[in-house]
Length: 141
Image 1 (tube, one colour):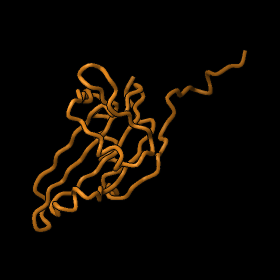
Image 2: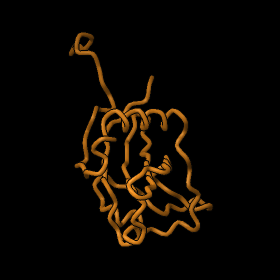
Image 3: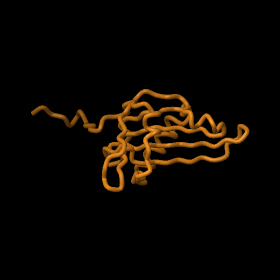
Image 4: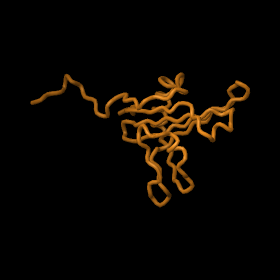
């Protein structure tokens, strides 16, 4: 079965103290719960120079992060304040990348539905339910 986005939260253009020092960077975070149960953090960084686009970096990682000895360091909760997420220290973290199917699912969704409005923060948006069924095949008997 193909992966689908169940829900997402787009935080828009990040405006924290750190980024204020770097006027040529635009940083965005969004989180996606997929139909396989994983929550993926999508980090997008655009680099600009005199209003000209220079570079883009995209990271797709599992949102729940553990230390190398298996202790949970951070856990994403939909709707949490992004500053609380960004400032959790990760020196001891064993950050796991999303797999290729998860990356493709989120990348397709983001560029189809969110890219043009990436600077705007969204609510938590439910896209589909984890379990969909055909009403024609449903029976109470």
